Image 1: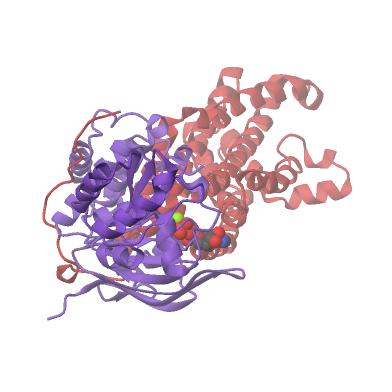
Image 2: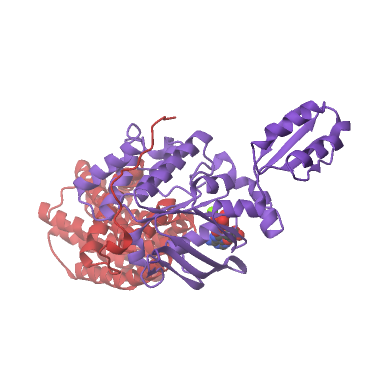
Length: 330
Length: 278
Ligand SMILES: Nc1ncnc2c1ncn2[C@@H]1O[C@H](COP(=O)(O)OP(=O)(O)O)[C@@H](O)[C@H]1O
Ligand SMILES: [Mg+2]
């Protein structure tokens, strides 16, 4: 028997003026998995999520959440989803507890149940100490956690996370990743968007790469990466005169051809098997080729894009990733 | 920074197919959602009490100022001006307060939390109806303070306490009706300050071109005509009749009919515009 799809979108389109923000997106998200939507700033990720979460009406195409049409049965869809937007959707003037209690009451919990649920969620998200303070002095990470907590009150089977870690410091990001993994362990389906290839790689069972409102690639992280190429090994030699000898050695030991950097100091080679690098280093030592610096680079989103779409990440990107946004609407 | 381990509750999630779902929102749920949204409004007031400055300071300052500036000129002395003035100030202050419904609605709709309300399975209308309900607290505060201020200055309404309470309720009900106008501006305007701007443009002629501060027959022709048909004038007269004489006259019915007409026109307009955005 085929597994039920949590999300099934066919030909979704949304235009703003003459900007086709989402231009025929198809998605099939299996139940019980983390599905990643990967794309640069402005690719149409938020617009797509908004349509799936009944916040925006599609101009064309259709989408179903657990078999319920988002346009015809929006109120049912809303009972099945939790949405954590790109910008915090909690009330700044209220405390964390007050926020969660109000959302709980709106979802039909009694006053007592809403308070108990708020307490539990704050506890499990490590926010108990800050529970009574107004959100104005919350850090970006705390706000994101509260936002996520608010999406979990009704224990929805499908959770949308729009760029859950953009602007977070590395440690808070790692915590958020753990949280997302645990959500899936309890039976939730998670659809998350991200600008980071490594995030999609770490969390998602399947990934859709989206560019200019279209899905340009879809598959598991491994499938995606093999279409792009693996990590690359980069060597900087003490003596540029050794460059050609080094390339010969790489060809012999790793079995791949390498390239030379424009300044003629570095050699770059695709790296399939990290274990073989030891052999290469030994060979270089035997041949008297001295290495100044060695590094391994994973393919970046830019390279994924270059490989899939033939163009790099559009220039608009930097503002979004900067830490100052910190999850609150400017 | 906290070092807390983030562990969401590990209760098993009920799969989508096993849930009881309905695409309709019942009237009971609509009322419950409205109540919760009104509660949210009250919590916000408690968190930011400076929001209440207009309903607390304005009755006090206006009553003092108008009584001592105009009292002598209009009625000979302050004491004999109070029975005419206090109902006028009351109506103006409370009606002015209802502008806030519109500006706050606009601010709320621009905030991130509004997106969450829109993604919840609640009555679409609840954020609007809740805001309108919560604001009646503001009108009650302004009404109580204006009568209290009058009392302190020596205004002892002859109609008695029961009539004063009734007059207060009348003003609150009419202000609530008028707040639908400003809620409409709040829904259709782009920014909170433009809501404030348009609302004042409506409010100033309405409250000042009335019998709130001066007798209508002291006004020049066209203004006197406008003041005599102005629903605010009828409301002021109704409050004066009630508080000063304990009588219910035609003006009270006129005010109530005016309130009903405003709600009948603006509630559907507002709700339609609001639902398009919500
Ligand atoms: N409300 C809107 N009005 C007009 N244009 C919009 C609106 N929302 C998004 N866009 C445009 O649609 C495109 C996709 O935006 P978005 O979905 O936010 O991308 P992402 O979330 O991937 O960064 C962008 O070009 C953006 O400028
Ligand atoms: Mg986005």
